[in-house]
Length: 203
Ligand SMILES: Cc1cc2nc3c(=O)[nH]c(=O)nc-3n(C[C@H](O)[C@H](O)[C@H](O)COP(=O)(O)O)c2cc1C
Image 1 (cartoon, rainbow, N blue to C red):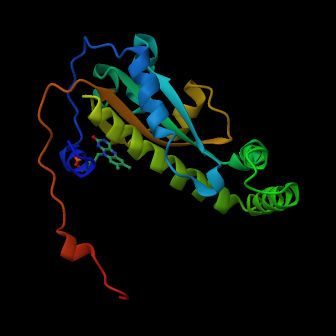
Image 2: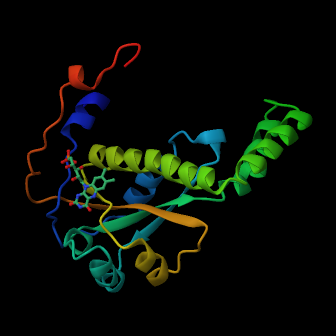
């Protein structure tokens, strides 16, 4: 499948083969593909909380408003956006310094700018949401390519998730993604045709 075919073939699957366990290598490959996503200043605003033990899946079920796929799929990944991704700036730009992409002076300037920007709470929140969402989409496409199905979920109690899974305040639960071997067709899903969503030059 080409990348475009893959995107068009991906649909949310809510019924899974309960017996299927995802090999660790597959999971790592999917997460690695997700982390190839672009991010603002390359700060990589994501963590992936992988929920795959029976006990933790059962704990997640009511938090996800009893959406059965969180129990039946092989794993559910909570995509967490990092509201303090500026803490990564030094490490990321140190690499740029090492590979000669910038001088120490420029690196220090950029890192200072990043810390300044992150003083804005709304900015930090939006950055976590935007950037982690890009990784989430890549995770779903990578899964599809590897023969897995997925369903993204925004329907869950974020505060309860944070409490039950000891998620520090720094991280914003963006969405859950169940991944596994689907054993039912997706629901038909309509899309507006391109001409309805393209605005040329200006509204
Ligand atoms: C941010 C987000 C939140 C969603 N939340 C849920 C959810 O809680 N439960 C669910 O069954 N599907 C959920 N979906 C899946 C959408 O219903 C689905 O993507 C949409 O209807 C298009 O269908 P398709 O994914 O099969 O193409 C969510 C999708 C997104 C992107």
